[in-house]
Amino acid sequence: MSEDSLPGDAHSEYAQDLPDYAERVLEVADLIPAGRVMTYGDVAEWLEEGGPRQVGRVMALYGGAVPWWRVVRADGVLLPGHELEALGHYRAEGTPLKEAARTAEGHLPRVDMRRARWDGGELAGAHT
Figure 1 (cartoon, helix red, strand yellow):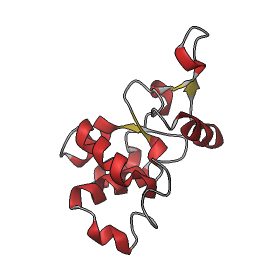
Figure 2: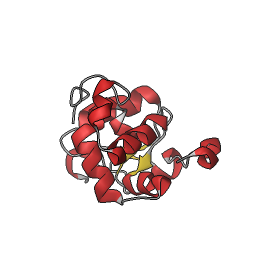
Figure 3: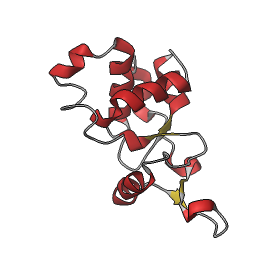
């Protein structure tokens, strides 16, 4: 998943061709503040539709239009194949990370879900 996966952004002309659910998932991803994350399940719960797998599918197909690195697995493990790109974004945004143990494969940190998870805060009452 690169930022080139989808031309323009989620609100471009191309968005008119997106399935409604995909457009709504991308809108939620776009709301997540820098330095914070939501899990695939959190996004589905926010939308009150679908589940983590459906959100993951949308992000895999169309996520390049939004800050895709802010939608993560519940365990905080970095997106396979995109770890270094995501890590660069997390470090630039100040996303809380848990450094990997020396015995961990690849020695890659994970997102510190306890500190980085975002619940929508003041936006929670105004969502879809």
